Image (cartoon, rainbow, N blue to C red; front, top):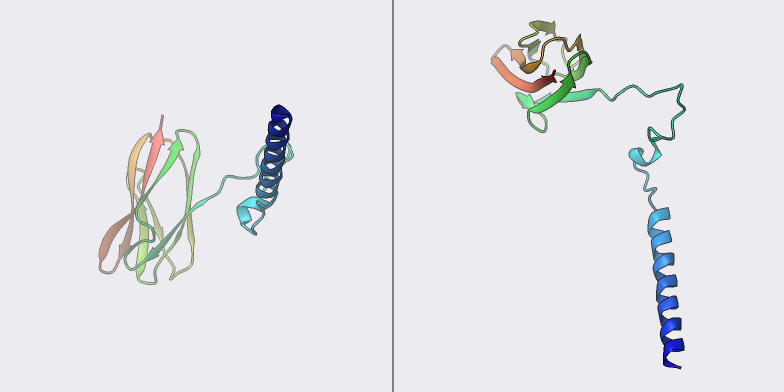
Amino acid sequence: MRSTGARVGVLALLGAAAVALFIVLSSGDDGDEAASTPSASTQPAGNPQPPAVETIRLAGGAPVGGVETLEFSQGEQIKFRIVPEPDLTEIHVHGYEITRVTSGTKPLTISLPAEISGGFEVEAHSRDGEFEIARIKVEP
């Protein structure tokens, strides 16, 4: 009798765990955008999604969230977006010697081929000086 009671208890426990696991796994849709975005394995093979473009927002003379390192492989396309502050005049990518003039707070996208490997500083220039907003790392 003891073994029958123990079996029933174990089965009841396993059933409760299975129900709890089902509830937890099926309640993953909390309205988060990432939950509704199809993964790479569920996307049609003929319609690949473009990679996300990193956006750097500037406020108070610094990048919001701090200076980030953007990593690329040589031969890829370096692409990032900047949301500047009103007093910025230009964005400069050292090493590649790319300079883009800003226009108020209008977002600016910088895109160039990753032809040179190494580490490169991205600076914002304003009337008051310059400050680093990102680092680009290009691996060979």
